[in-house]
Amino acid sequence: MSAVAAGVGAIAHADDGNLPIYTSPIDATGLRLQLAASVPDRDTGEPVDIPVPVDAAGPMFQELMSKPLSTQIDEYWSVRVDPETGTTPRQQVCDRIRGRIEAAVAEAGEGFSLYDFSCSLATQGALLVQQDGDRLTFGYSLFGSSIELYVTTPATCHRDTFAPFCPSDPGVKVHLAPQLVTTLTAPDLCGLRATNGTVLVQAPFIETRGVLDVAEFVDNVFLGGWYGNLAEQAIRDVSQQVPLPIDSALGELRDNAACTDPASGPAKAVAMFPDMEIAIEPAQGVILLRMVHPPIGVPIIQNVDGPVNSTPGFARPAIAAPPIAGPGTAMKVTGQFFPPPLDPTSLWLELEHPSLCRDGVAEVEQTQAAGGGPLVRTFGVDSFGCRTSHPMPELTPATAYRYRARDCDVFTCSRWSEPVTLTTPASSGPTHVDLVLDGVVLGTVPLTATGTFDADIVVPADTAEGAHTLRAVSGETTADTPVQVGAATGTTVTMVLTGAFFGDRGCPVRPLPTQAVTSGEPFALFGTGFAPGSAVEVHLDSATGPTLGTATADAGGSFCHDALPGPPIEQVGDHTLVAVQEGVARVNLPFAVVAPKPVR
Image (cartoon, rainbow, N blue to C red; front, side):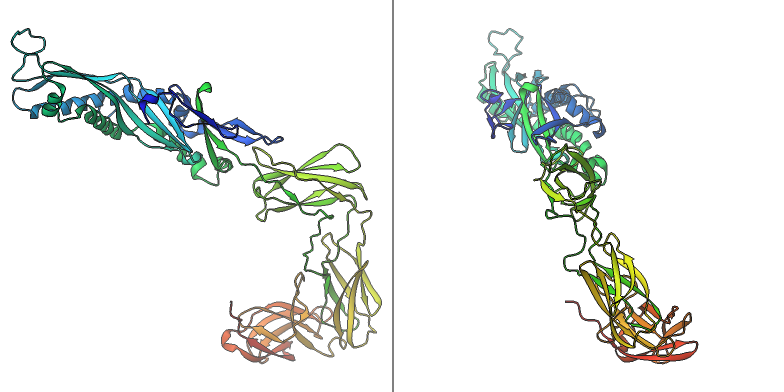
């Protein structure tokens, strides 16, 4: 970056009318860094700048944001004293230049010495800046700097001595513009970094003093190019020993909880601004580091055809009952996946959130399709699946309502979704289930809001032994399950291995198609015909074999145990379950133990 381009000929290009992008160096003297945040307006979506508090970022970062950057580098260069040396970096550079010149003069031999050394490096600099994407390259130029010195030689006289036949000591005054170049990268807030800088010497101009020409003076005494090399090396050495304060200030921010603790509130807020834009705005006196909040995705209303149905699409209404029952005995029946009773005064809205699944809110606007003012309801959004359901209560039956939704975080909102129209039902529909055995209604039970029911019914005492069908009827919906009616309690004792269908609740009571269990896995067992209220022990292979578990027969003489341990892999093969009650073996059940299927 050339020092000659100090703000002259700077060209600003606007990308589609947005931020000015400066492709040539411009004068940034007096401009300060300013942190800003850009969020889409909650209603229009247009970007709006909001202030960013820096109080919690540390004193160095606060100072970095509070003063013009050129002023802070001026203070670093010529005001602040390094505690290690007791001098400013400017003075340290001058001392190093003098020391190295004195050493070079001494090497010239006896009769050579340095005097009237003057190091007039500028105390304040001009700051240039050039932008390249997310990089800002700053050049701090010390215009008007000079170094002047004189050297005694065996063949010359002191320049203040009048000697007609003795030429004056040679001397030189070098005008130069040292430049300290540093680069600030700004990919995002927690990625702000600055290099310590490189050193260049711009526009050297040499005035000679005395009788020797400058070429002989430089080549023979000062080892060519000293005026550039010595200055560059001296400034480089000092800047390594006393680094520029910019990255240290940015380091305070990088070490803050907002950048180191993802679970903290500040870090969650910062995460909503994943990008950063740079805007150089000389008219406002700032270089903006603008955190950018991307637009929030518009939520999608899923139940566009009517109220939410919580029943999985693959599920069908089903009932479960004990596979065997005696005449006159009670049995427990459960049902699931029935159409739940409808609430004609409410609807449920199901939303899919494309970008805001956690730590946000959904705003839902409701209006009657026939007219009327809108009502906005607010719901929390905290879903790993990015789908949520929300109630719309206090509605009028058989009425059409129009809904639209938007997602919001603490800063902004998405655009509103396309509106959908939903209509409340005219009535609640079926609310109960009739349980029917062979055409006889054994009981009526209410359906829950999720389409389930639990019922205790009694098998009629005059029911014939054999296979029967138990049916649940709710409006147009029916579900059947087979029931085997056996002999009276205590007459015939039966056991069967059981399992469950998807959605079944309680102890599994559906007979397995094959009487087999998997080694090492728990299994379920149903029994009937036992003495009511007495414990039933389940043994392996004999009445005195290992006890797998104990259950108590209910008032109808039945039991169900859902956690008997499967025999170990070493016992794969044919076995027998023996039910013992009051010390007497009541029934044997042949079954097989099979090895687990390999996982593929």
